[in-house]
Image 1 (cartoon, rainbow, N blue to C red):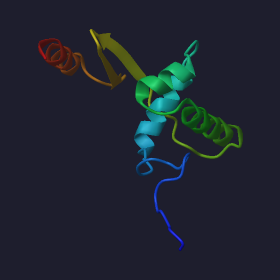
Image 2: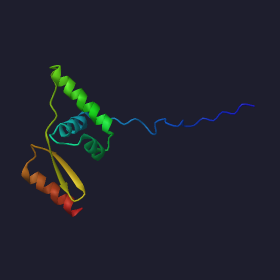
Image 3: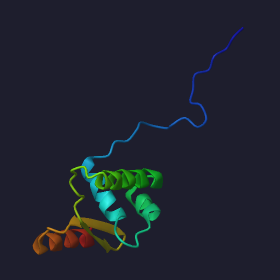
Image 4: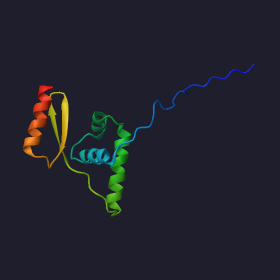
Length: 107
């Protein structure tokens, strides 16, 4: 008698593969390129694996060094209010930023 068991093998991926938008990748790479940033800590804070962020950063730097026309990632401003991290583009106006901070503080 032969018995077969179909199940997950040890080491097999759990769940589906996640996809990240180009905008998210660009923002993550911009933050990773900031001077003095700990890329591994940043990756964990963003909810991605450090090797993934290192790979995105390496790919971006390779494109730049090859002279490929690429849009540079939008610079971000990161604010920490209590336990919440707020990331906004540098082009946000003051009134909108104040509304966001008030909403986070009241939550």
